Amino acid sequence: MSKIKIAIQKSGRLNEDSVKILKDCGISIDNGKDQLKAETRNFPMEVMFLRNGDIPQYLRDGVVDIAIIGENVLIEKGKDIAIAERLNFSKCKVSLAVPKDFEYNSIKDLDGKRIATSYPNTVNEYLETKGISAELHQISGSVEIAPNIGLADAICDIVSSGSTLFKNNLKEVEVMLTSEAVLAISPKISKENRKLLEKLQFRIKSVLKARN
Ligand code: PRP
Ligand code: MG
Image 1 (cartoon, rainbow, N blue to C red):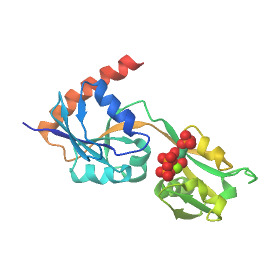
Image 2 (cartoon, helix red, strand yellow; image 1 turned 60 degrees about the vertical axis):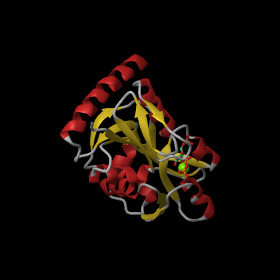
Image 3 (cartoon, helix red, strand yellow; image 1 turned 30 degrees about the horizontal axis):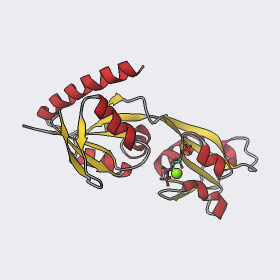
Image 4 (tube, rainbow, N blue to C red; image 1 turned 90 degrees about the vertical axis):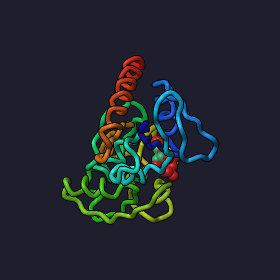
């Protein structure tokens, strides 16, 4: 019998709630510590624990059938990937921020400036619509440190509670997009596994309904 392959975040802010929603759907994961692939009980499913940024490519290639992923990651590098369900957790913003003492009036103040980010495509697109050009520095984490070490004048990153910005003496100046966890589908999913996806979606819908 076929099993549907689902990718979830290996570690980070989506991991716990992703495991939780599957659990609420009656699917428990047999997961040893540091095990990157696991079987489930009560549903024909295989779970892969992957890095966020790698998930769009795995979906595209059909290595996994579905994934629980931040919509912001799809916007950055998976615009071609379809969303089956919005999951109403891990809500965050993707925002531009500058040092507190930066006298910021409008996006024009960022023209010609250096912006550090892990979301270069999202930033570029946003700046383009505003007619602004900036020098982007792509870094993969701890982005908020960049202005303090002289690497950039501004940053673009995820804002959730706002505590990372606050602790690094930064202020949010533009919200580029809002995001939440979504269930994404591989374009290569088989007919058989699409049936399983429908079953899963049915359970997810009732869980989400009960949560509200
Ligand atoms: C994420 C994100 C922000 C922060 C936002 O970083 O990149 O830095 O959380 O959350 P907050 O507004 O609640 O403070 P994470 O801790 O995942 O580390 P990383 O950037 O090094 O990957
Ligand atoms: Mg961070």
